[in-house]
Image 1 (cartoon, rainbow, N blue to C red):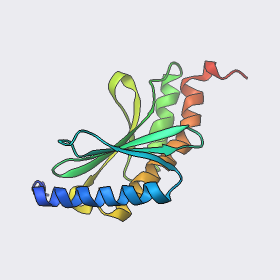
Image 2: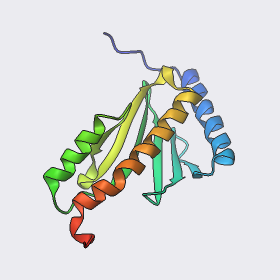
Image 3: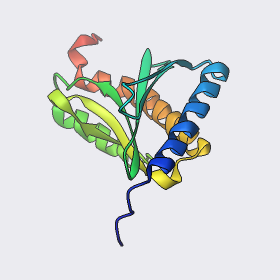
Image 4: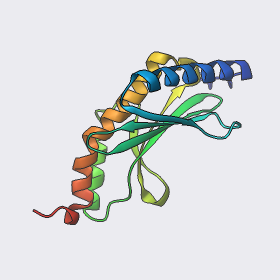
Length: 155
């Protein structure tokens, strides 16, 4: 199985326009989307801030690379206690996810990350990605918080 050739500038421009149009429409129509921001012009990156129920807000970063659309969100800082149970909980949650997985990032913080081949980026896939990440964070956040920061929750 070979590696796909890097996308052309024209293809990257088309993907960028697709993401811009999708996010502009969702910002207008979807009450869960609080804000959409872009990074500096030389980087094709968006920050999508969503209203949460279990976690107050979730910000998803979408970044176009030459072969993939990378997406990720910060979930929480490194656990303070119950490390083995905490990481076991996250690994077991990963098993039910489609297209994303928990990972350990800078300063041992917990992120949820995934990638999509650049040629597969469509509005339907963007909707699936954003909806899935939001759902995975919402379902996992409080249980993980109660394990990794148990002493902060008396009783």
